[in-house]
Amino acid sequence: MEQRAVTFLKALLDAPGPSGFETMPARVWRTEAEQVGADVRVDVSGNSFATLGNPTMGPHVMFAGHVDEIGLMIIHVDDDGFAMFDPIGGWDSQVFVGQRVTILGREGLVPGVIGKKAIHQMEPDDRTKVSKPKDLWIDIGASSREEALTLIRVGDPAVLAGGAIDFPNGRLVSRCLDNRIGAFVVLEALRLLTTDPPTAAVTAVATTQEEISYTGGGARTSATGMVPSVALVVDVTHASDHPGGAKKRQAKIALGGGPVLSRGAAVNGPVFDLLIEVAESESIPYTIQAAPRATGTDADAIFTSSAGIPTGLVSVPNRYMHSPNEMVALEDLVLTARLFAAFARRVTSTHDFIPR
Picture 1 (tube, rainbow, N blue to C red):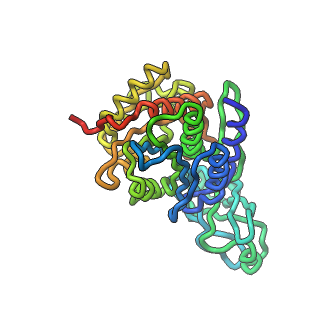
Picture 2 (cartoon, helix red, strand yellow):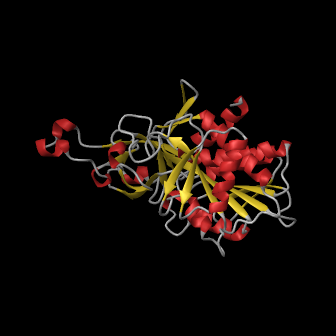
Picture 3 (cartoon, rainbow, N blue to C red):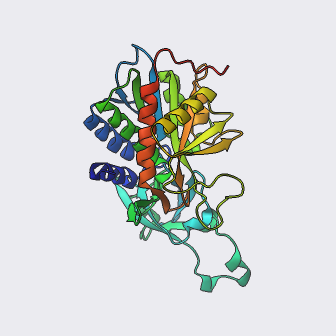
């Protein structure tokens, strides 16, 4: 991966932006999109758009990757200045114990630590119990509620602290690879198209609120507003190339093994077939993953938006999902961006994505 791309990716990953509060990473994304030369805009839901070509003059391809991350929210500040919290999105609550956090406070970022009663002070039976958010708190060093409220307030979001880290063999670790890398991939795919423009117009979208998208989140509102001819969604999927990986229930999904193509109820059949055709013609390795029900991604919302949008789902293998230290291979991001760009070049006004 080019150093320019790595710099952009790390800036995107390190910007705190949990669901509903994606402003910081979205600004990083739009700044980069302007450098690509795209027509850039943002909507009322916080979705960011970057378009190449004229969507009114022919087919229009949507690339979607969500820019939010799981996080925390302050729900109460007690008399001693300690902050109680609830999760934003799906956490394993055992992860919280002893973590540092960054709160998006009143006047800027506020550091904190998650506190818990020390093991020495616990009853024997309590030592083996799983910690829950109600048993924990955030300590920002304040000595009173009044002091704490000069820095934070109820409703402030937070993320676990820590920046992106390079690992050997082209691997990257971050707290928010799910799915900040999706927003990265769709913009990198758009960049590839600037040197070899397709017939179709293409819009990359950094969607919001996917981690809490019970009603479709930013994916639904952006797709409904655009009504593209076809949409590709990029998200992450669970890698199985580690101890305890689910290798008996699916094909091995490995870091560095290329994109994972979903096939199932929420994926348009002709779009899936074209993705396979493109991957093989471009010599891009891939794995097929079954999705017999909803995919749990933006594809579910886009597929049923408007009168129905033909949608494909491509995933990047990810180890340790929804933890402070997710891991991916940079090679997979490059391959996925190539696949998206090559797909867009195949879409013409004669394409029919109706299953027959």
